[in-house]
Length: 157
Image (cartoon, rainbow, N blue to C red; front, side):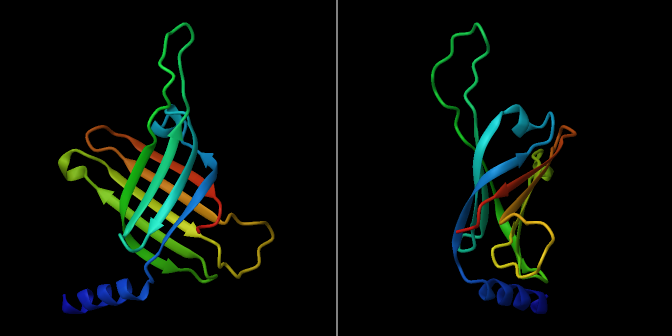
């Protein structure tokens, strides 16, 4: 146990504290999923190694059904925050930030965010790779819900 604790402290100290965010420019939402039903139009991802969190913020579009009277108020952004669990560097220099929050024991859900920053990727590819990719996975607690959404964003800055 002492060995595991020392390794965890070493890893946490080896990652310099920073906060970076990227705008999401492309979204691939699961058909029938929560974010797709919310008609999400834009968003951003923030990785904060100081507070050890990853936050996905997406903005639903304003929608008023035809023939209805609606207040001209933008809906509140949807914010998904999970604790940062690991930071790894891949073989090509890409940084992989993984986070998850498991509330299934208390009738909640499992939320996972994986952010890959290719800003310092030095490998050569035949096609262009995105600067930042985000994968969001959710599994429902009491209801059998599974959602997988992918986002592509600008460079983490």
